[in-house]
Length: 94
Image (cartoon, rainbow, N blue to C red; front, side):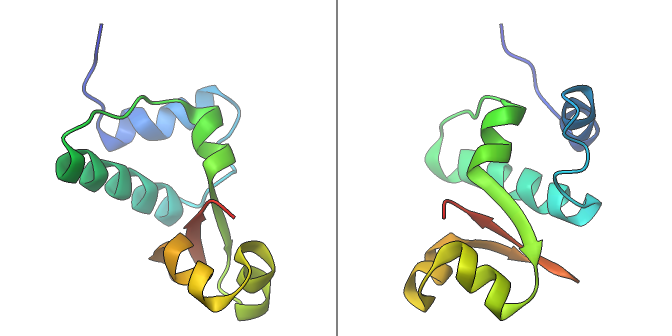
C-alpha cells in the first residue's frame, strides 16, 4: 500500500521517529524538495524511511572547514551538496 506524502506528513514522520532535531526546518524542507525532484526526474517513487534518510543526508554548518571535513575534497563537495541554507548546508553521502 502506498501513500502520498506532503511536507507536513514528512516532517511529522521525523518527530515520530525521535529524529525531529536531525534537520532544521529549512533543512527538512530542502530534503523534501530534493526527494520530490528526484522522484520526478527518475520516475521512481521514494520510500519514506526516516532512519535511512538520517544516515544518508546530513545538515552541517555553513562553514567551509566543517563541510570539507565531512565530504572531503572540493570535487566531492560539489557531488554531495544538496542545498545551501541560511546557516547550513544539506549534503548526502560523505
